[in-house]
Image (cartoon, rainbow, N blue to C red; front, side, top):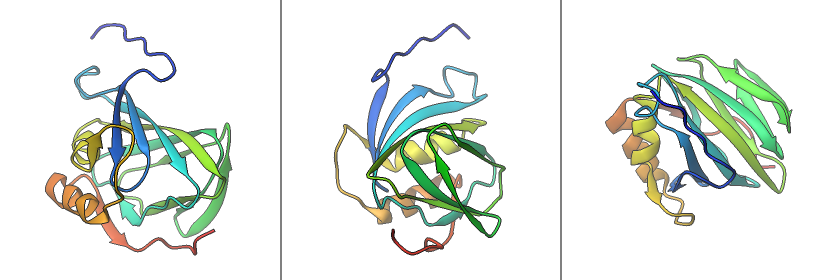
Length: 155
C-alpha cells in the first residue's frame, strides 16, 4: 500500500441509482481489500429499503445534515458529528430528514460491498433513481440482501 491523499471534492464520482452522489475516497484496490470509503451527498427523503450486508461491516459518519437510522428495531436520529456502526448481517435502513446530508461511508472488507455500489451506479453526478438496478446489483454481487421496504414513513 501507499499513502493516499484526497482533498474535498477529489475522488471518482458516481451517481448511485438509489439516489445520491458517491465520491470514492478509498477503494479495495488502494487498501488490499481491507476497506473502501466514499462520501455520499444526499437530498431530503432519500431512503434505503430494509437490508443487510452479509459479509461487510458498515460505518456511516454524518458530515452534514441529519438522517434517521433504523437498526435492531429502533429508529434513531443521527446528526452532524454522529456515526452509526452496523455489523454485518444486521438489518438496517435510513432516510435523510434534513434538506440535504453528506455522510462518509466505510465498508470493511471492501469486497463485495464495493462491487455492489459500483454495479448500482453510473459515472457522473446526476442520473435517474432506478431501484430495479439497485436490486439487480444486490442480487448479482451478493453484498446486499434487501429484506423489505423502508421501515418508516417519509419525513
